[in-house]
Length: 380
Image (cartoon, rainbow, N blue to C red; front, side, top):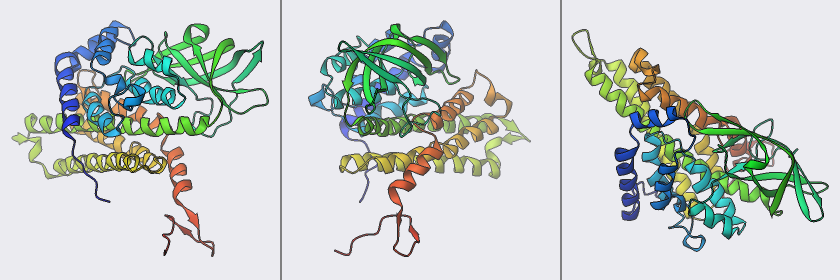
């Protein structure tokens, strides 16, 4: 299969609008001031996202979206990743929007797209790996009403005021998906090192509405896979920003009578950074192609997520190293991109989790007990 690494005309327009937005509203200085001001989400910025239709970017037209292509998500989120946007776009426009669409929750999805409500998925419990863990949060029913009890950790994008999608297990049942108000739980909100918001929640007899009680794992796994592609798009933007800043620094910084860019060993480091960028881009497009072909996205998403671990983090490390002490100061964005890269590794399952998932989806046993790295092709 030949992959097209280019954008369609529509996707180029999406990308251009994102670049204009960053230039007009989200330069690095403005971002620092916005974070220092305190609110986890700038409501003015969020409503601009709504007005530009960005919350609908990952949805099909039948679900109120503008296309539903992961290629569209890439076109939007790569420039926003370069700007280190802290608003919970992935949590809403990709993760929760996909879950609400898959479960047929039209009213909630409409409120999300209109900017009336934000959503976050409360899934993780210790140990915090995304899929396959036993669910300890319980759902008890009395007179037809559900009450949830338990705790959830590292709820990405939760900052207060959201509606929370919670995975809990009814007594004697299988995990189900519930909707609760964040005002009904004990919410501990933190701004992470890279600027994203995260929260831990405690539920004590929290009133809840049942959203879905069948195929929950498949629904969430599909949403996670698409969110990993979105995360990869933002990582591409981060890497590109680090490389561009490093190239400019090496051209202007003088040492031994000339610019640092004259030293071959430093150019080799830059070459390594660019190779990682292009390999990551290839894996993002491989995932996009897998979804477009109707194939299972899990294998491609896990391959990409492994790349979003140590290899991508190494780009940030080299960027800091080549900047010297300047790279770790808050005035320079390179250090902030490195922090985003570190947290990217942990979001939606870390590299080890996805290595295990990748192996389980691609390795089959031969009759003689040996192992093939990929499934054998049929001779027919």
